[in-house]
Amino acid sequence: MHPILRDARRLGLYLLAWIPLGALMTSALAPTHLSWAQAFALCIPLCLVYAFVCLAAAYVCRSLPIREGGIQRLITTQALNAVIGGGLWVLLARGLAWVIGIPSAQISGVLPLIFLAGVMFYLLSVAIHCAMFAVEASQAAQRRESEATLLAGKAELRALRAQINPHFIYNSLNSISALTSIDPDKARDMCIQLSEFLRNTLGMSEQSSIPLRQELEPVRTYLAIERVRFGKRLALGEQIPEQCEADAVPPLILQPLVENAIVHGIANVVENGFLRLTAEHADGTLRLIVENSYDPDSKRSRQAGFGLDSIRKRLRVIYGPRAAIQVSTEEDRFRVELVLPRE
Image (cartoon, rainbow, N blue to C red):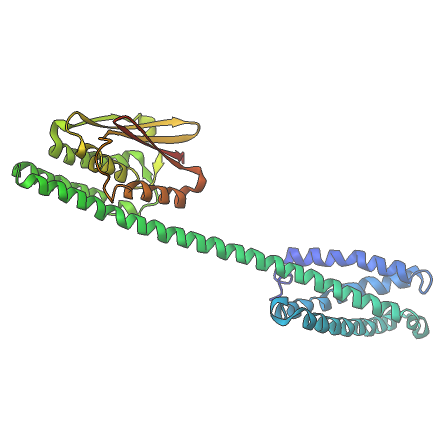
């Protein structure tokens, strides 16, 4: 259906736009050729009827877009249609003049002017419809691009989430394996805690966001598992204000950071290792900080960058430039800070 005809408001505005054209035609025909009354009675109805005739330009514009038919073909076709439209307007003018009683000899003198106006008005309608379709095409292209970007972002996010759980399980099983020959009872306790962790996190990564309170639950379980393994080598600290716990965060956003702190930090420290979690509000953002001790002289694992890279990509997909991740080192301390918009 024609885009103007399917919207009553748009049709009303379109017809109102033809009234000034009718007034212009009236002033062109009166008082030289017709009286003011004759010109008004002829031009206003003539323009309103011709307004619907000019709507046919839309179908030609749609069937012959410039990118497909070529500019020359478009101009030729529309020029021919304009001539046909002008001729049709002349016939309408003759018929309407007969109805309102304008003598044939008198109306014949203004037919060339009516024909020229009909051609010009039709070409104006063509230009308006071409512009309208160009805007609609641009908007449709933007919508498609936005949808494609959104789908790509969701696919990338699913891929990143899919990497988190296997990576964690690998690290946990590695810890359990290290304990089986040293302390079987602790290894059994770790298996129980690992089972609890997996039960708590099952389906969590499929949610778009969760309260920080819920995000901290599996992190604390994981640290409890690792505390069994490292004992006094791992001192845990936490400074999470209650008002921060209700803030929404992406699920499992802290888990890779805590894993990195354990695997690439605490595991290489001989004694007095620590890991501290901090949350705070600042300038309309939620800041999550993970600090841990590490040995600057230890060799960096090939997988050391997984946690940071995955979080950078997730923040880019979810928040764009509104979020950031900041990494810093100071002597034997490694610090990662997440800056998230409060939502």
